[in-house]
Amino acid sequence: MEKLKSLVPETLKRMIGESSADDLPRTCSSLVDFLLHFEPFHQMVRDLADPEVALCGKNKEAVLESKQKGNKCFLSGDYANALDFYTQALIVAPVDANEDRNLVATLYVKRASVLHKMGLLRECLRDCNRALQISSNYAKAWYRRGKANASMGNYKDTIRDLDVAKILELTMGGKRQKVR
Image (tube, rainbow, N blue to C red; front, side, top):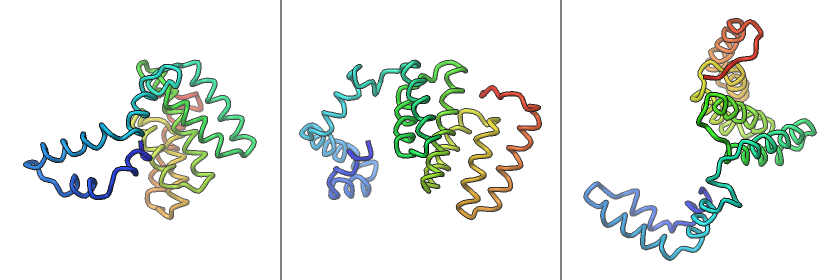
């Protein structure tokens, strides 16, 4: 999606950015005219709808397989491939049931670990925040976010995050958490 966004002409982006509510019909019309004749957009729509590509399909088995491959890559220090596998797992992860939400939060934290190792600290923080949106009582997400904040020099946030992680960990009594 980011690649597609980057291909939109600057003049069109500027027109949309500077538009007001009164300009909405004109700017929408300009954007639709552009997209109707823009092959990368049509390819993305085909990819989203194609069950073989599975960008819209949710498949727990594929999620678990990608997660396992990501774990192996992470353990061997192959962070680029680990990132790809965790991202692919997130794309096809179902989020309907509590168990699935737990899996999604776990995948965000795993990907955050990879991003941290790669020095992509803002992205790491973003994934920790996503995990915490799913479950505010996920100690590992608080811990990972604390580490990212420490690496970024945000020490006040680091202390808060690590304190919350410690409290949650103590509350759980060492038992594996259920994400809510």
